[in-house]
Image (cartoon, rainbow, N blue to C red; front, top):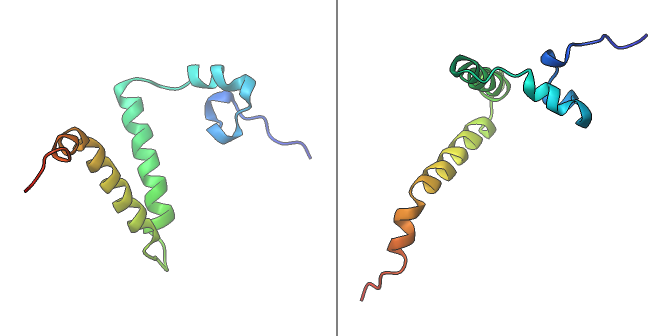
Length: 89
């Protein structure tokens, strides 16, 4: 039984071959609404996989908090960089 032929626009990134990558990228929606819907779909996928399960553990919450800590450190790095060269004595 042969696999079903899926249009390039509906394929996931992991299913796209290297030669098909430019046409897959061209088929994406880069409008503000398309980007918003892409982030929303990613959030929904993360939430349903790690948070919204019967026997939830700490894994999903820990990944979310780790991402928040790394993001906040990145945003405040320029301020922290100037603080570390000061001498407190």
